[in-house]
Amino acid sequence: MADGDASKKIAAGILGILIGALGIHKFILGYTKEGVIMLLVTVLTLGFGGFVMGLIGLIEGILYLTKSDEEFVSTYVTGRKGWF
Image 1 (spheres, helix red, strand yellow):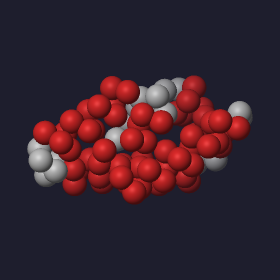
Image 2 (spheres, helix red, strand yellow; image 1 turned 90 degrees about the horizontal axis):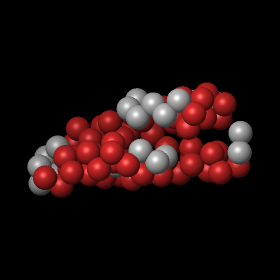
Image 3 (spheres, rainbow, N blue to C red; image 1 turned 60 degrees about the vertical axis):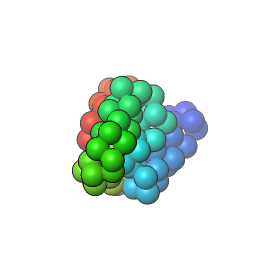
Image 4 (cartoon, rainbow, N blue to C red; image 1 turned 60 degrees about the horizontal axis):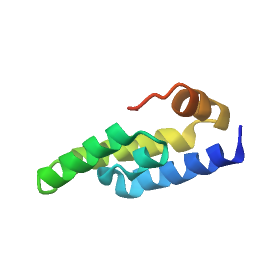
C-alpha cells in the first residue's frame, strides 16, 4: 500500500467521525458525488438532515479506521465502494 493511501485512511476516518455531516471524508477519498450529496442534504435541510449525515459519517469513519490498510485499499481505493 502506498504511503498516501494510509494517510487518506486516517484523515478520512477522523474527519468522518468529527464532521461527517459535511461529507469532507468523501472528498478526501475522491468520492465527489457522495460528498456533494452529504453536504447538500446537510445545508438544504438547514442542518436537520445533518444528524443523519453525521451518523453516516461517524459509522464510515469508524469503519475506515478499523479496517486493515490492505482491506481499506481493496474496498475504498481499488473497489471504489462509495457508501459504508
